[in-house]
Length: 349
Picture 1 (tube, one colour):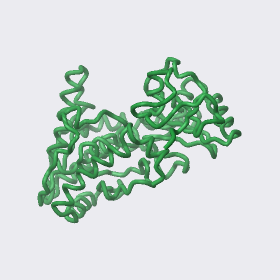
Picture 2: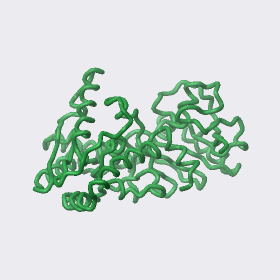
Picture 3: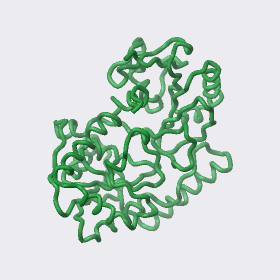
């Protein structure tokens, strides 16, 4: 199959923060003289002419265009592409989405956002990271767990707070929401309900179920407050060992309305217990998510224990092992940086 031709209007040797570049463009940024992609961009190539391209790419995030007051420039590129009959690929970065004008030829990739509040041209985007099995355990093969009658539900992370912290989180979110509604900020409003409190309540519900075992490492700070490379490595290793020693892993949103842990759990070949807070998931037209995760809407979170037990009881011993392998393959084939964009552009099914 010939490479997908991408056009971007700015030179890729410009100096910008690494986190602002859309991921499909980053391999070209590292080597601005290349026109044919390699690594994650293999199968893609850069075009010098918009008319000869398959897609026009806004290479920097909408957050960046807002922050630098270049929204007019971004809109101009989208309109030029529209006149040329070209589709435009763009993205938002960070925990919170930003105000984005609607155009029929514009696709917005985003890890966060509230699915029911977004237009159809906004699509879910996974969070990308290095392969944790390879990085921390020196293998690309799933560390298989045999099915037990009483499954172990794991969680390692921040899920502890107090009334003061919850109050501060609510006030901070309310202030940010007010700034959006009064036109002082482009950052989209968020739920006032603190995510740490939601996590805490979910974990307590599961711990009270006699049919489930728990394997929790509860932290009061993000990454246990790690600051040095050595501390970060140690806490990350502890995080992934917790997954290795668990059958299912609780995945609840963080500051933004998405869960990095969802993708990390799949990469480790474990089964996510995904608390859906109106999240926008990637490739919903290509992935049957309910085959891979225990998906529970947050409004039905009181039923989470029954949902886990029902899911687990439907799996026989072989199904349970096969699902671990299938979840790892799902991450590798469709949600990793190396393959997500190929799936998005090159594989209709």
